[in-house]
Length: 193
Image 1: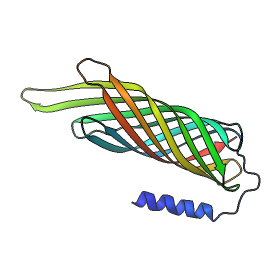
Image 2 (image 1 turned 45 degrees about the horizontal axis):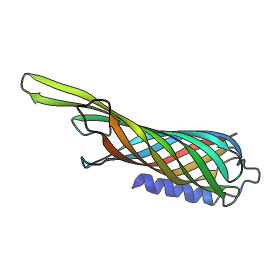
Image 3 (image 1 turned 120 degrees about the vertical axis):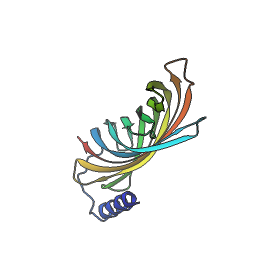
Image 4 (image 1 turned 90 degrees about the vertical axis):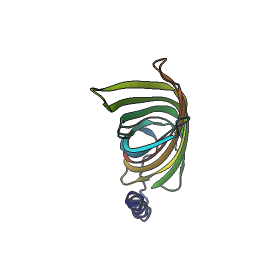
């Protein structure tokens, strides 16, 4: 709750800033941020969350259209007997609407390449403990909404949500394939060249 209130306070402060007349909206951009990562694995009824990171970049061809690629990843998604890591690489178009020179809203959609690694172990198995690793990967789709707020001519604060869905194949015949849904809320900073 503190994170949400902090983010809302930052947004309110940015909205109160005067518009920047020379804000850049076209060209290359690159940035990163911190994210809240929720992973829902269907068929096993697991809903896991952790703090992760987001890296993104792309090119805005105009004030309203661009191409963006992003990487979202998180570790420590597992429980006491599991160390789960998940990552998604997404590429697709981004559509923007500039409310003014300071505030821009955007929507995006794209293809996602998703990987989940589950390092699990069992304790108290008599004289020995055991563990194993299950790797899953597959393609899916993604869509998202967000906004960014110009702090200077080139520096922007970004608040975004992305939904990612993918069917993941197991790397071994010992494990079932899984369907996953990921929800990523991120707060980041990017530089518009």
